[in-house]
Image 1 (cartoon, rainbow, N blue to C red):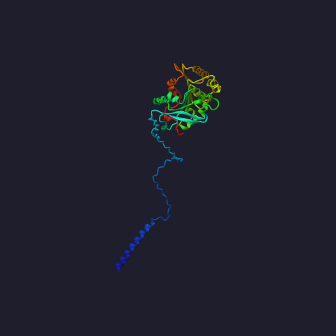
Image 2 (cartoon, rainbow, N blue to C red; image 1 turned 120 degrees about the vertical axis):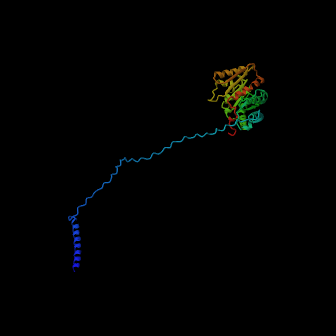
Image 3 (tube, rainbow, N blue to C red; image 1 turned 90 degrees about the vertical axis):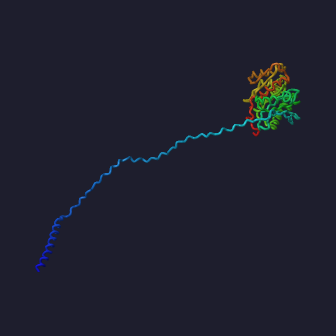
Length: 342
């Protein structure tokens, strides 16, 4: 019994000790209301303040102007050079033609000199009408004075330009003394021969491509036509031309009178050539014609050849000079001539 009491008292003592400890612990807690919590801000290391920058005004992006690259100048091949025409023929040829003339009422023969390679070139050639004198015919220039031969030589030497020679016969029509009304030799030449030539041959059909000249009476006719119709011919030549104050009697057709009052239209004065031998009995009137031209200030070329007479030998000796005068303004290069297709 004593043992149980002891154990019982020990247990109670243990519980009393625990209770006292608990009370002590409880006494340590505050009995006042809990204080308002203080918020403690823990500052972190401040971030560096960014340096403000101006907000750029938006501008259009500049359009890049490309720097032009140097343009390469292409090296072009040189333009093709016209190949000079090379003619294998050494001489031209003379052909005979007949003009069915209504004015003359008969056929008028005429000889034509065609330069070397005329048919191959396809070009239009300038031409000269060469008139014979009294009591002569179309063979004077071609056979006696040998104008074709002189032209062949000049072409070989490149001293003369290529040209066509037209050498008509005059016959009775050239010597009938008719000048003002048909039938006249002049009308036959201008109204029939020229159109026939320009239809049948590849000629330069323009004033600048035509010339006319003549021997003795042929020189008279050449001046009558060229002075009265300067729009037809760019040059006129008289080789010992026959002039007479009374022939032709109609002063409108007489060169000695025509030049006294002549006024050429602008740009239509033909080039004028006169030559005579100092022994020629016609020299007096030829010099009178020359003096009138000079007093009127009309440009011309005049030559008095010493010891020359009114002869075929004199004219033959100077035929090369005559051709050089007619061709003075014409090209020596065949490639420069107008095309026959034009």
